[in-house]
Structure formats: structure tokens, C-alpha cells
Length: 92
Image (tube, rainbow, N blue to C red; front, side):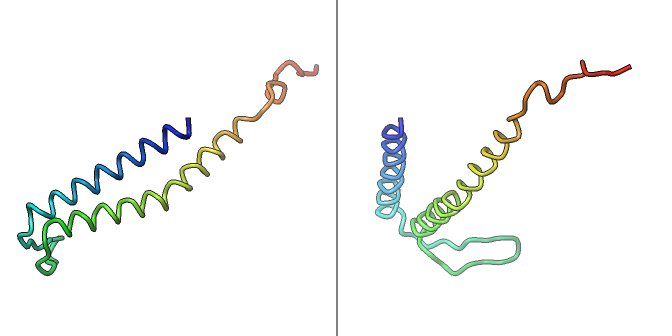
């Protein structure tokens, strides 16, 4: 199963690299990015896309271990016995 996941990840990365290569050949017109009132310098369109994809890959690589930690904690909380919550031990 891990081999299939690695194959799918490699295909996704290869598709992105191919798309960026095609865009770099077709779109060399300079653009400027705007965020609220800030405006960037003029950069080629393909460079903006390549930078965005690179930042996304790095952020997902950093966030993914946090998801696995959260999942492990959630699974460890579910390890209780039914006897821990029985109400049959009522003494009169």
C-alpha cells in the first residue's frame, strides 16, 4: 500500500513540474502580485506559480507530522475499558 502512495505522490509532483514547465514557455509576461495595499515587483507569471507550489509543498511537509500526532493522541484517548464506566457497582 505504501508503494502505491509513493507512486501517486510522484505522479502528482511530476504533473506539477510538467505544468510549470509548460507555463514557463507560454507565460513569460511580467505580473505584480497584490495583497491588500502591498504590491510586489514585476515577476514572470510562471515564477509566481512555481514559488506558490514550492511554498505549498514545504508547508504541507511541516504540517503533516502535526496531523499524525493529533491522530495518535485521539486514538490513545479511546483506549478505555468498559469496566471503567460501569454503573453496576452501586452500593446500598
